[in-house]
Length: 125
Image (cartoon, rainbow, N blue to C red):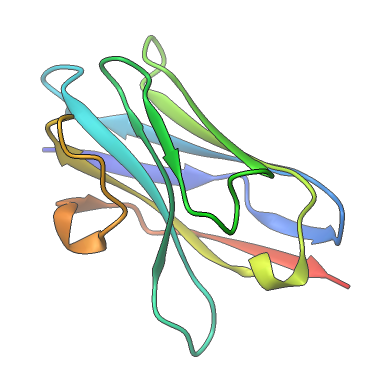
């Protein structure tokens, strides 16, 4: 069974940085896509970024593509989200999610089958 555990959230001032981690287990191959999503209070969950574990292809939402970087360490079964130049608008619970297959590049949450519990990121102004 696939399990995902996020860590690395916290409180940071605007302009600061955080690195989130998503520790994965239960994968039977590298043919998975990992996505990062966030949900702010009173707002719908939105896709932030995703990475193809088999070839490292990445994709970003426009709102973060110049500030966030997603990467993976397949030996450690861990995916990272480096977040720089954080803004108060980035405050949210951040979740990682996994889907089998790497052909489809998607930030649609309905395409993901497995979810972590989330980690809180709070950016103060």
